[in-house]
Amino acid sequence: MLAAAAGLMQDPDEDVRQAVNKLDGVSIHLLRFGAENMADPEAVDAVRQAYHLRGWKHLATTTNAGGPLHNGTTDVWL
Image (cartoon, rainbow, N blue to C red; front, side, top):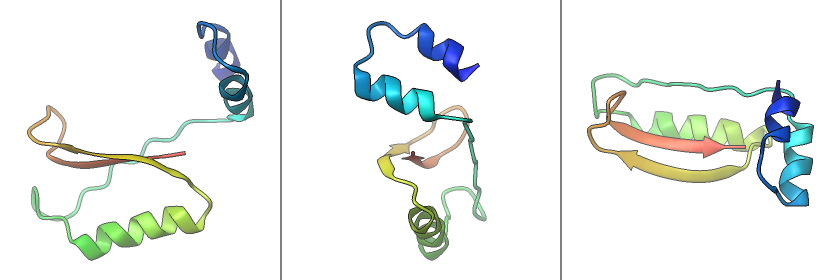
């Protein structure tokens, strides 16, 4: 499925095409910590550190104030 999706990309550069060709899956994790807007900063940092130690690369962090799914912070890792 990922290879088929890569074939639909409009003129990706070679680096992007190589990265997509090496993918073997996509995973999404939704983590909730306690009451709404009450995430324990130490717990969140522990999760981020665990991803980092396992070789994941952090791409971006955004804050969603009042979105339809959650109020909080979103991290994107590759």
